[in-house]
Length: 156
Image 1 (cartoon, helix red, strand yellow):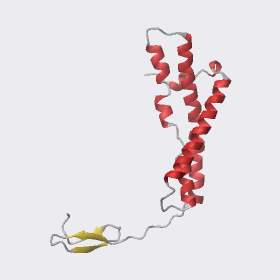
Image 2 (cartoon, one colour):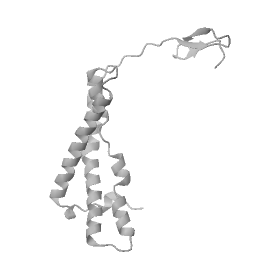
Image 3 (cartoon, rainbow, N blue to C red):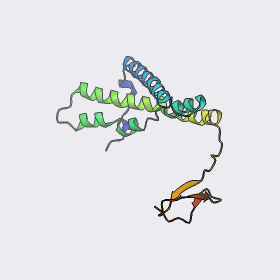
Image 4 (spheres, helix red, strand yellow):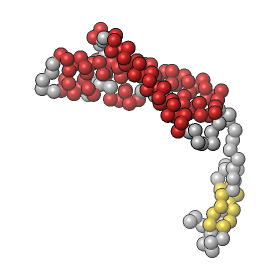
């Protein structure tokens, strides 16, 4: 197995390619945020909670960290290694590392900063649970001090 971070060679990067990578990353993050907001649009969340969903769905770059070096590894494992293929592999790895650097710290910071501001911490009301008994009559189970329901009815 290779260590991806040790293979990043910034001197081989073309800044035009890095620029394209950053633009793709920015478009991807914006689209992901829009999809996150739309996915909870019909829910019972308020606007602040919907915005927090957008923040929490920002990429944390775990996939990039896991598979960023695979392209370069495959090129180096092949029988015929040419300079262009190796450069492509290094470029994919560098863009993956760039994605990690650009998305992970801001994503974690957004969650930490916006969570307390956008979310209200209110304990949910514990509702009684209806449990069907063998005689098909329902009994109401009352929650105990821990919020767990106690019932004399056998489990169904």
